[in-house]
Image 1 (tube, one colour):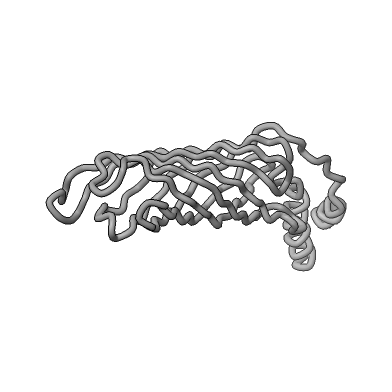
Image 2 (cartoon, rainbow, N blue to C red; image 1 turned 90 degrees about the vertical axis):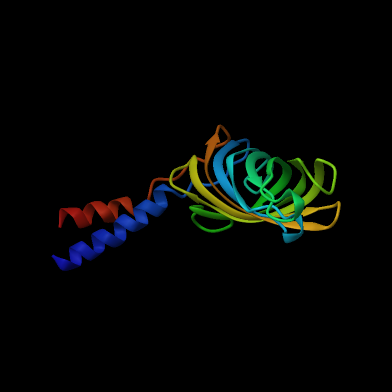
Length: 201
């Protein structure tokens, strides 16, 4: 009996993996990711760290690996030093980045990715520079797929402002929804028969 339970547990796990083998990013899919972020501003900005809500990203996958993503987030915070201490400041962040999904694993349930691109940080008011600040940004993140088209996403992104050489860091979390694309046809699970035989015991 115990042997049957062990076989059933192992077979069930393998069946789960096999049934999710086609999960992951796919060619031609549009990915919509709503989420939230947390912005760690560079100390020289004298701006309090804050939550970025809402945060929305929209991407297109050229194939299983390469994609292009645009994102927007908005926030409200305040200054914490100098004559402008406690003065409120509102901001918007726009980014456009290329993404490379690292999905060469046997089962695409967890897919790390790297991204890099350009962006604009809008601060109002901004005490030291123009309101629109161009930046270079790079990110390292991962997606955990719960189905063929839904994944939890987390990432850390560095934003380097070209004017003044300022580095801000963001932590982002969201849920990705894949729409359309070429879903691969999976072969019948080789573990299904093993699972059924274990249950019959």
